[in-house]
Each structure stands twice: as structure tokens, then as C-alpha cells.
Amino acid sequence: MRTTYWCELIWLHPGEVVENVAIIVEDRRIAEVYPGVPAPPGAVRLAGLTLPGLANAHSHAFHRALRGHTQTERGSFWTWREQMYGVAARLDPDGYLALATATYAEMALAGITSVAEFHYVHHGPGGVPYDDPNAMGHVLIEAARRAGLRIALLDTCYLTGGIGDALVGTQLRFGDGDAHRWADRAEALAQAYEGADDVEIGAAIHSVRAVPPEQMRVVVDFAHRHAGPLHAHVSEQRAENELCVETYSATPVQVLHEHGALGPRSTAVHATHLSDVDVALLGGSITHVCMCPTTERDLADGIGPARRLQEAGAPIVLGSDSHAVIDLFEEARSVELYERLATRERGHWRAAELLHAATAAGHASLGFPDAGCLVPGAWADLVSVRLDSVRTAGATKGSAAECVVFAATAADVHSVVSGGRRVVTDGRHVLGDVGALLRDVVASVRP
Image (cartoon, rainbow, N blue to C red):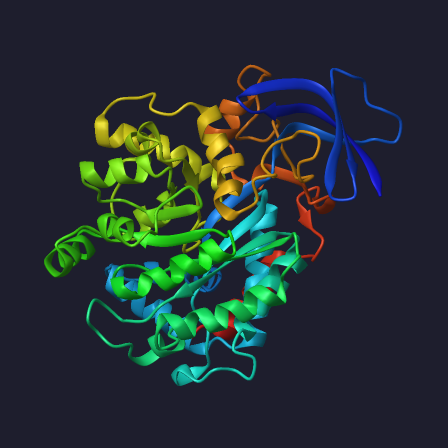
């Protein structure tokens, strides 16, 4: 199918905003781009600023059921985690399909066209595998397809409840016993989607708390064998670092480096509390670093050294993680605004750099390097943002990108074309009332 879109303004990396652009889409790819032309007859007109699709580089879909509920008491990361376990304990394949579909549809409404799902709720209660041991992985992929997203399903190895601690309670649902049994199950999942261009089966080392170093190489080898993405939670909290150094005489970044887990297809998630050596290792290996500012602030984890990492050679990408909000514009501007708070200086990140993190760099970290840019041959992902809302009114061609990054919200996205399929029109998803879907499914999975 051939469709022509005409955009009032589009953003082209490395930061140029261009007027009056016709984009011809054939099936799921961009075929041609014509700047500076009047609207062709029959073209679909896209008002405001059109961006490439956004990439959410870190998601735990079931955490969406926690939004608001974890704010009813002061608590801590650990009380938050107990509520998270309460939701995880109630998930089954049908419930998870409904919850993930609604969560991914919310992402689509926010302009996200690809998601990296850090997936570790593998088994049934007590750790008993389903008849198909990958049942929960299959429903996440089906949910993404229903919502109109590509997905990098990061099958997560999760073997211990803490360094030296056995899995207990709900954690039993996360584990496979050892890395070799994890790899056997993940291999079957990868084979099921061999040849699917909208799905990447990647791997994740949950953390140095959950995967002993001697088991990490199996996960790394799986990712290399499939040329897929490899992600890991890294140095999210100081206590994690302290226990890691006490046990292994090395930081989490150093442990991952020693076991081959860093590199251009790898992503370190959070990377909040780093030493100078850690920054050098991540930058020198060209490991992506996923900043999740809305979750990091929600859990009071701290502010990561994003600018230092970027300058060292580690590409920065963005994720909504626990989905305290789903808004990559908020994630993007928070990277700059938190550096301002930490340094009491402005101007660490330009809008173009933050949009690159949310688009091309993010898609590359998911294993979709042919997305995140509006050029012939790329995935046909077009996200159009209003420039006439109460938040963005007054924007000009010269300030459009800055206005979107520093003032717009997900609510300003009015049209989303994902892989050639228009999934959002006039701010409404093809699945209908996503708010109602979320209301009903969240009520069904909360304890």
C-alpha cells in the first residue's frame, strides 16, 4: 500500500527543522521524502512538528498497575518493591496480555513506536512453568503487535534474590534455576520469532544482585549468537554498589566488563552511581546507557552522570521503566533539568541531542538501527506533535524542536504512524478508549 503524508514541519537529525515535506510510504517503509513542496492531492496532512518514532528503551509493562498506588505512603524503594511483587504474583497470561496491550497502547499515544520490554515474570505461581514455558513472552509480543509497536523482548535471566540469596516468594516466578536452563528456554523463544522483522529477541542480565558472575557468560553468549541487544540494570542504588564491591572487589560495571557484557549492542540501565573508571569502561566500550529520570526520581535513586557518559562515548537513550508516567518528552527534558539542579548550571544538552536519544539512538539500542530517522528505507514511523496547544502555542520553525522537548507532553501527540500503520489519529488509538482499558485491567490485577 502506498500512502502520502504531508507535514507542516519535520525534524531531521542532526537537528534541522524543515517546512512542507511530503513523505511517501510504501507498506511499512519510507520510500521517498520531498522537502519544500505543496501538499500533493490526496495526501494525509500532519499538522505541527513531525518527528521520527520514539523508542522506549526500558519498560516493565506490569509496573503500570502501580501508578499512583505507591504514592499513598512515604515508603522507600523496598516498600515500593513489595507492592510490585504483589502485582507480579497475580499475573497470568490472559491478565498480562490485557495489561500489556493497554500499557503499550498508552505508549503509542505518547509517540512511542518501539519498546524494549525487560521481561522476567516467566513462570506460574511457585515458579512452575506454564505448558509453554514462554507463554508470558508470547503475550507481550502479541500485546505490542495489537498496540502497533515493534518490540525488543529482553528475556531476563534472574537467578538470585540478592547476592548469595535464594529466590523466595514471588521471585520464584522469575527464575529458571541456572543460566543454562534460562538459555534453553530463551532459545525456544528466539526460534519462534526467527525472521519476524517487528520483533527482536534479546537478553538481559537483571543485575549483579540477581545473576552471579559465573553465570553471566551464558547470557552474553546467547546475545552474541543471535546478534541481539543485551541489557542490564546497573548501579541503580548505592547499596547495590557497596555489596558488589564487598563481595567481588569490583563495581557492577567492572563485573559486567570482566564477563564480556559491555559493548555496542549492550545497554546499561540507570547507571546512576558510577566511578570514573565505570564511566570510562561504558564509554570506551560504546555501551548505551538508558536514563529513566521519572522512575529514578520516583524511587529517590539519584541523578546519573548523563553528560559525562555521552562525552566518554556511551550513547544516551531513554526509558519510562516503571511507568510512573509514560512521556518520553518528560524523560528527555529531565535529563537536562536534573543536570541543571545537580550543577547549578544550564545548557548541558541541546534539544537535538535529546531528540536523538529518544529516536535514532534509542532504536539502535533495541536492535532496530533502521528506525528513528525520516529517510528513504527507514521504518515508516511518523509522530506528529501539536504546536497550538496551551503548552506549545507560540512555537516557530526556529523554536519548534526546543518547544517540543522542553514544553510539550505526551498529550500533544495527535498522530502516530508506526511501521506504515496509522495507530493514532486525532489523539485517539485504534483500540479505542485506552483509559478505560487501563482502568479495567489495573483493577483486575491489583491485590
